[in-house]
Image (tube, rainbow, N blue to C red; front, side, top):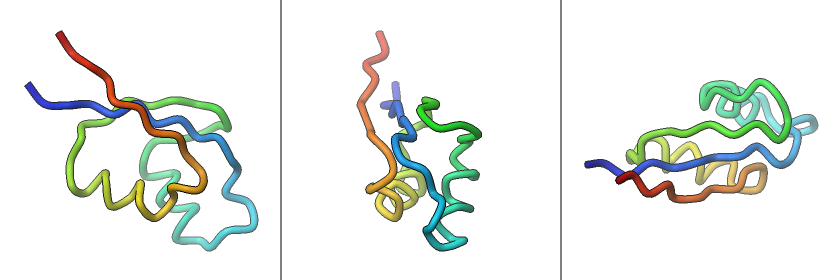
Amino acid sequence: MSAKLKITLRHSAIGYSQRHKDTVRTLGFKKLHQSVVREDTRAIRGMLHKINHLVVVETVNEE
């Protein structure tokens, strides 16, 4: 049983570096205020650390 993260894109990446825009796209976001659910891995945590000013992260409990 692995933890999952619900990630919501709250702010636009316009005006930020291309690396931030690429990270937003790699996480699967296509629109503002969209939410995606991803496995809680070190790679995902690293991406979220780079764009933490653009997203809101919640833990999803699986039962």
